[in-house]
Each structure stands twice: as structure tokens, then as C-alpha cells.
Image 1 (cartoon, rainbow, N blue to C red):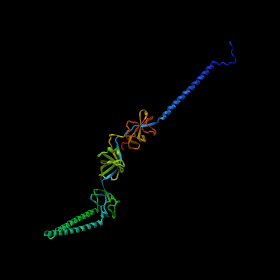
Image 2: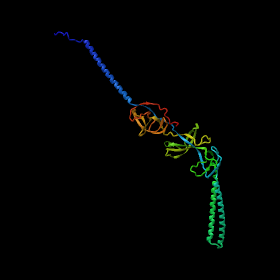
Image 3: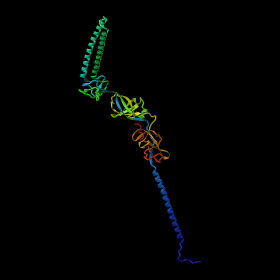
Image 4: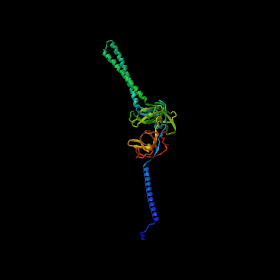
Length: 393
């Protein structure tokens, strides 16, 4: 048996065990670190993926309920007569100023027409001359007829005298017609009211020269019958199918903001104006109280039928694309569906959608410009309060 080497170091067993434990702990620490780092990487990837999905607000469209169309209207008198002169001359006097209530046939002004007066005098003198010539021709024709009966003159001479008598009679008729024409013109020297009403304009004064047929001629007076009024409204083509004769409308005017007036639709133009794309409609109302005046601006409220109520969405939900107006809707599994829509009225914060949406759809209220069909989104529901802008509008 060999002897032990005194210079050789032999590690104690306890020390070997301690080293093995230290090594094992180091391996565990490294493994735990690698696991934590892998988990952190996975969390970071998940967070990055979640951040890549945009968060959007969604809201359900609201029904506009009864549709009330609010449009500007123009109030006009039932009868409105601009009065022009039919004879030239100088204004001699006027007796009705603006605001004067007049009766039919009441004198408004007198025109001095010296030239017309002289023409009438000449026409009457011409009539007297023609009448004298006609009497002489009649006597002559009778004499020649008597001579013809005794064969003292030829038939031709007698016919000439009778023909001359007929010509003189025609001249008398023409002269009488000229006198009657000028007498009728003389009647137009008096400017009178055509109907009961109020004078709303006067564009003449004493001594003013009045020339008939001037291209810049203005009416001397304007008379309006304000007992009944017409209210004219231009209705957009989209709503013309709901416009029916006999339907009622209410309106307000600036001077009576809290008073509601009512009118009945009596007729329409039955044609769309090419310039504006609107239908001109006429309402009528009684104005015996005299509260309203021709020319008033009115805000007209027309209640439309509820057969096909429209829905409204926030104006921010609209997507202006090359293909037209579109709206983004939340589809299955939070994927985006793009819907083309047709718009109705614009209420500012909200718009009316005539076609393309259903009341049960969830509309993305704030779609990013880059949003496309099929994109995944995170949806946050919003309350649809305040979207019923169609009521009362």
C-alpha cells in the first residue's frame, strides 16, 4: 500500500458540496433571468400589438322622429299692383302717399296733358268736318238718284255720287273712333286705385315729367291688398314628394318671434328650378288683423310625413372619399365595414342619413382618415343623446 503524498491537497467533501450548491444556484438565477426576460418580451409584444389597434368611439344612429322642414319664406300681398301712367304729361297733383289706405277707384293723382287735350280738340273738329261732308254727300246722292229716275243722268254718275256718300260715312266713323280713343286716353289722366288696399310706394311728385314707354320707367304708385297674404317657399327637390296641396305650415317672423302663424298650401310651380334645384310652393293665409306686411321674411316649418323616417349621425362620422360619402360601421369581431350613404339635411353637429344605414348599426363616430374596410378596432360605446337634430328643424 503506497504512502499518502504529503504535498497533494485533497478538497474536503463539505466544500465540494458547497461549490455544487453555488453552481446550481447560479444556474437557477440565470434560468430565472432568461424566463423573466422572455415574459417581458412577450408582454411588450402584446402591448405593442394592442397599441397598433386604434380605439374608436361608436354610437347608434338616432331616429329623427317626425320630420319638420324649416325653410326661409317670402311674404307677399295677395294682390300687388304697380301703377304706371298710360299718357305722357306732367304730374299736376297727387292725393295718396305711402301708407294711405285707399278704396277701389279712389283718385291717387292727376296728370296734366296739354298735347293730348289739343289732339282731342282736333279730333272733334275733324269729326265735324267729316260729318258735314257726309251730309253734303248724302244730299248730292239723293239728287242724283232722283235725276237717274227721270233718265237725266247716267247710271255711272249716280253710282259715283253714292260711292262718295259711303266713303264720307266711313270717314265719319273713323273720326268718331279717333275721338273715342282720345277720350279714353283722357280718362287715364286720373290715376286711381285698382282695388281696396294700401299704397306701399310713391315714385313721383308734382311737376314731374311722365313719359310713357321709357325703359327706365318706374311705377308711380304701388297698391297692395294685405287682407290676405301669399307665402312663397323654395323646397329642395329631395322633399318635393311630401309636398301636397292642402297641407298646413306654421311660420314665425322676426318682429313676432314668439307668435306662430299658420298658412295653407294652395299651389306649387309643378317644376324644379334648374338654377337652385328647388320647387316653388305657395301658401296662403288670412291677415285681417294686419300684423304681417308684404315683404316680411318668414321662417316656415313644414311637417313632413313619417312613412320613412330618416336617421341622424354625428357629422364627424362622415368619410369624404373619392367614391362618395361613406360611413364606417362596426362589423363582426370588431372589424370595420364601410357603407356608402346618401345624406339629407345638415344640422351642423349632426347630419340626416337618407339611405345606407340601419338604426341598429353601430357607427364609428370618429373614424381616422386611414381607416379601411376590414381593419380591426377597439370600440368604446358613446351615448347617442343630442343626435336627434332632425326634430323641430
